Structure formats: structure tokens, C-alpha cells
Length: 331
Ligand code: NAD
Image (cartoon, rainbow, N blue to C red; front, side, top):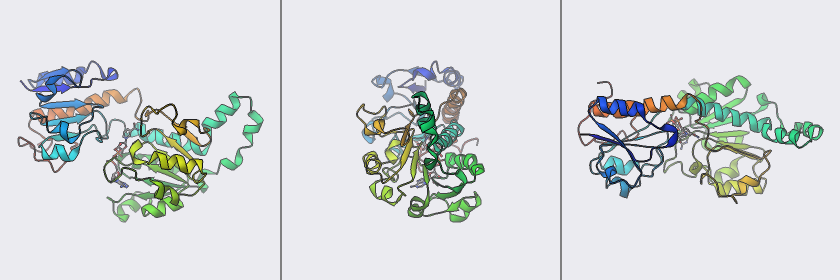
């Protein structure tokens, strides 16, 4: 019998009723366990949230045909090794796009309107003093917003922010200038965007080519009055370089949902900045009441496709040659 295995069943996703029903309907069994359970090597299908799959772990998965991640980002799984081993890697591509875009918009607005700081000041009895923060609050329509990555989330952020009247620049090396212009965005080079944007918002996957995309060099190009927003992955930003730029007042602020180490160490300097400079949320951009149902549905769709002899709808390593031939999704 085919085994669908969840090595890291997280509490909020229990009891995996959708997955169990789909597995049983396809004549497979669903097993839950921890990462040390030996069945991980026997599973044809692995559904995972947080376990890391470096090349050496992937090469041990002799029976595995599919790994599906409960999420959009698949940076926990080495895609090259999976491809080399004929293992298809899929994700849940759409379940939290709206939430992450909403959260990115909330961070952009919170930073520009100083909401967390003003809230703190009122509670501390500083009502009048806090009213004199005009200089920190530019009119939004006088500002330039730079979006790095114009995929599903970047485009939804664009849709949410456009009505405020920002000048919006975009950088995405996988889209032509015409395609970017067609979205209503001013196409820019990476350097141009960093130089001109007052707010830079990151919407790229974490991959070898985007690790530390925002490094000391990139930060040096940004205006000292600019703010960096990150809801993508902590590894996209060189956190030490960011902290240094903030400490040396070469960058005004940052609003971050994701960090290099989550949760952060108690002595992470980002925690000691005033909320006028740094706003932090606990990798919560994807959260909403509705998101979990959609997450179960998308992961289930992915493995049900494979059990029916098809590729999942969202394959993250499209050059893979599956161990057994698979028809296109829906074919
Ligand atoms: P997507 O694949 O639809 O879009 C990513 C875009 O980034 C693509 O258009 C791609 O061309 C572009 N890109 C790739 N490399 C780039 C580079 N070097 N510079 C600029 N653009 C580049 O993905 P998405 O659905 O928009 O999600 C983006 C990321 O958001 C995910 O990979 C994930 O890491 C992150 N995310 C975070 C949370 C959270 O809870 N904070 C939740 C979901 C997703």
C-alpha cells in the first residue's frame, strides 16, 4: 500500500482529516510521526511543514516520489538534489497570497504612519509630544515604493498600495520591462530601485540566487531615509549588514515579518530598536482564520494528483524526471 507520510505534523493542522480522506479514497494510508520515525524512508509521498531536506537526507529517500511543503516557500528542501533523485517537489501556491499581501501593506503603512510608535507614546502618556512627529510622516502620494519580486504576492501588494498614490517601481529579472509596465509599474534595475525608493518591499523566494540579496552593498545604495519591508524570508537579507546600517543611521527603518533566526535570540539588536525605526512581527504574515482550510486543500490536491498518475499543479522543480512517468496535471 502507498504510504503518505507527515513526519512533522504541526498542532494547528491536526487532525489532517482532508489528507486522510483523500489518501484512503486513493487506496493509500496516511501516517503521522516525528522526523526520526523510520517510515520516512518507506514513504512514497512526504507532506512536510518545517523539516529541512538537505541533499544527504534527500538521497536516503529511496522510495519517495513526491515531497509537498505546507507553504509557498520550499527553501527547506534542496531542489537540485530532489531533481537529481527524480523526486517531484510541490507547494501550496495560493493559500496565503492575500494574507501576505495584506500584511505587507500593513507593515508599509505602519512604518510610514509610525503606528506602533504612536500607539506606544499614547500609552506612555506622551500624547502631545507624539503629535509632533510630522517630520517622520510623509504624505504617501509623495513617496516611491519599490517592489522587488513581482510574482503572486508582489502583484497583490501592488494592487493594495496603488490607490494610495505612490510612485511604484518594480524589479523582477524574470519579467520583461514590457510585462512590468503592463502591470502599471515602472520597470527598474535593482540598483535604480534601491537608489530611488523610499520604501523597498521584498517578495522573492529564498534560493541560492536571492540569499543575502539585500547585503551591505545593496543597503549602501538605499536612501538614509528609506525603510526596508521583508515578508519573504529572513535569509534574503544579510541581517548583520541591516543592523549595522540601522545603527549607523544609513537606513531609517525596517519592518520585518521574517528573520534569519526564528524566533530571534534575546540579544538580537533588532529587538532593541525603537518601533519608530524597527517593527517586528513573528512570521505571521500568512495567518488568517480561513488560510488553514485552503492549505489542507492545496496540499491534498498535490498528492492526490500524483496518486492518480499526474504531476501536481504547482511543481517547484519543473525539470525533474519523475521516477514513474506522470501525465500533466488534469490530463
Ligand atoms: P512567486 O513565485 O509567485 O513570485 C516570486 C517572484 O520573485 C517571481 O516573479 C520571480 O520572478 C521573482 N524573483 C526571483 N528571483 C528574483 C530576484 N533575484 N530579484 C527579484 N525578483 C526575483 O512567489 P510568491 O507567491 O509571490 O511568494 C514569494 C515568497 O514569499 C515565497 O517564496 C515565500 O518565501 C514568501 N512567503 C512568506 C510568507 C510569510 O509567512 N511571511 C508566506 C508565504 C510566502
